[in-house]
Image 1 (cartoon, one colour):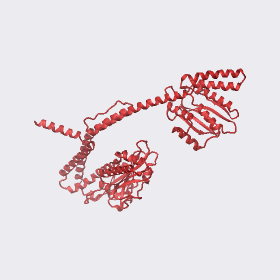
Image 2 (cartoon, one colour):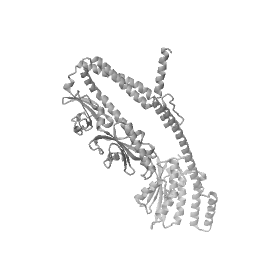
Image 3 (cartoon, helix red, strand yellow):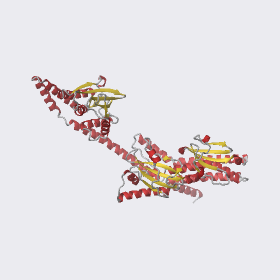
Image 4 (cartoon, helix red, strand yellow):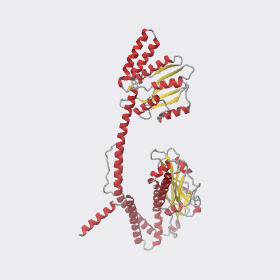
Length: 597
């Protein structure tokens, strides 16, 4: 084997090894390599240039490390914040939080699974002090940590956050405080709301993670005792919230003029104050050095070190960019394919044959998900089509059309022949009622025909209840040609008569009118009947939306038919009116086609 062949073989072996690594391993190796290369360059260059004063140069390099320390702190905090992402949808945790406590082996097993999950968090994330799960259903908690929480746990902050209307899936961060469990220690807590996976935006619990302030302090504190560098964390009010000297915590740092939500450096009271702003937490990592100590360094040596640091950073940036461009290429492809699915392309698929087993699993899961979504959409569309067809056939099957209509016409003429005008009027109105009910088999008719249909019905009812009611129809002609599902007003008038006017001693009225509301049409059925209370009306509107069988079939059928054709927010809405009765608002679109909108 020649040298060139050996080189190619080694190159192919390295590529194959990298491809077979998991994504986490790739990221870990990437960070290690980047940090090692950066540190090696800095150390090598610093050693060659700073041969006369290694100690002084090392002290100055510590100043440059403040930013790196801050980045390390941010990485650690983000790592802790990301802990709940992989477990909030865990089946055992979801079942435990969604169901009441039970005294049986199955429920005990679920609790054990949740404790194992919490134990995995403590095992996988170093430096976590304790973990607890709060169950909204009954206010109980599960705790895992150095000591039993008992009744000392404080979930008020997390409960206030989870009760907000605009709550998202993002975790809530709290600043350092005296820990309610371990009273002598300051801790940092992160609350992650847990939502029911089957009901969108329904919180069922809180996952709490607490980290000791001492652990956080390790990431930004300067451990070189020979350098008089003081480091601490300050909040947006200029109050120290983390410090090696615990007696300084919650004292005023005297640096309020540094609070500008950005990085900075100033000379204050004979000290150089360097500030690094941590945006996500609204913190400031502060480092202070006496100016007279800094002036001990030679200006030339300082300039040389600055040049080395800049070169190191530039090289590190180029190296990081090269690695990230390769590593995140699959993510770019995944995002592109997801955007195609969002536009309705259900034929798109992903294949990652050369990016390792983890990305192969992602591509397989994505492809299966798209196939299931496509099948579900087709199934829903077919079910909706069948539901419309069944409901309209059921409605029309209640009418025996032509025979009944012809018979009523015969009765009408017989009544006129013998001078029974009330009978003639009622029969003629009933014949007109059924003629429009047929509508030649059409499901959608003009509003004018629908108003004639309900007018015939009200004519019959006025004769039947001569001293109880009168009716009016006042629909502007501009709405006559608006297409609507037929037979939606008659059930509303019938409901108003039987539940509103029959209970009155005085004569009542029913009025039907229509008005425009933006691009919609609202047809109003107004009565001055016995009316309803505010609570009754609210409950009625809610039961309509829930399709509650307690609401009359006719009214419920009208509401469902409108929604089948138009969707939300169209349908019925009840409200009180100025006459003491009830108004039924029927919201419709200005134009409805036969296919449903």
